Image 1 (cartoon, rainbow, N blue to C red):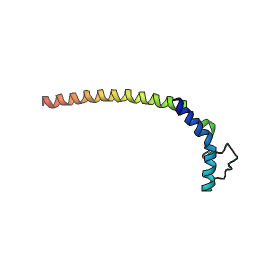
Image 2: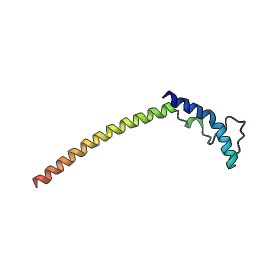
Image 3: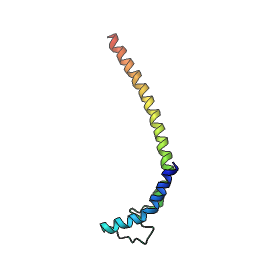
Image 4: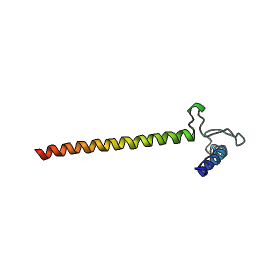
Length: 90
């Protein structure tokens, strides 16, 4: 996990330089390479989700998916057992 965080930090440091070179080659957005705050997409800070928050949300939804999956599996087995009993009785 520590190596992953280090990679993300390195990528974030190199992002302004990469953004400037991409913008200079495409010509769609004017950005100077001396401006360290230039990004490919500008978004308001309130819409930003940190890596930790994203990881927590993924973990919660993963566990919730497992719980829902098992409950649906049990319901499906009960439904199939009832259906087979009805077919067997007929």
